[in-house]
Amino acid sequence: MAYMRGNLAVQEKTAERVHGAPKYRETTKVVTRKSHLPMREKLLYLITIACVVGIAGVLIWRNAYLYELKMQVHSSENNIKTYNTQITEAEVQKQKLLDLVPQRAQDELGFVVPETDGIRINGTDGTVTDDTSEDLPATAKK
Figure 1 (cartoon, rainbow, N blue to C red):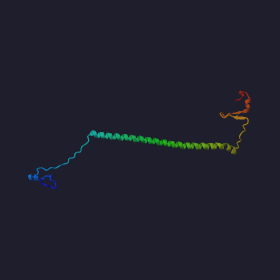
Figure 2 (figure 1 turned 180 degrees about the horizontal axis):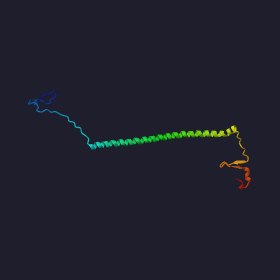
Figure 3 (figure 1 turned 90 degrees about the vertical axis):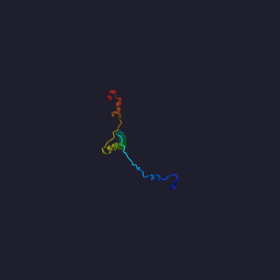
Figure 4 (figure 1 turned 135 degrees about the vertical axis):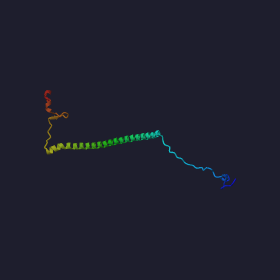
């Protein structure tokens, strides 16, 4: 065995060279083929993608609709709060004006409060009855 570059296990290739040059040359050629997908598989992928996009679109549309409804509810609640405050302010103002009416009538228009010595006013129906009419029979009281 020959000692070749520090390795005794390798044999020299001089024996092959002696017999002559090889009659053929070993070459490698890489052949790449484009593998096309069959038409059914392409349609399956296309339909799958269309379904996923459709479902995502429906979900987004529903979420947008719910968001819009929530915003309408929120704005309605805000409107109700503002209207309630306006109503309470108007009621307070009404009460103040009602309290001023008798005083203003007395001061500006000369209203005199009538004396109610013999007259009674029913609160429910607003009829005026005379206290002296109690002595009369029931047919004369109308």
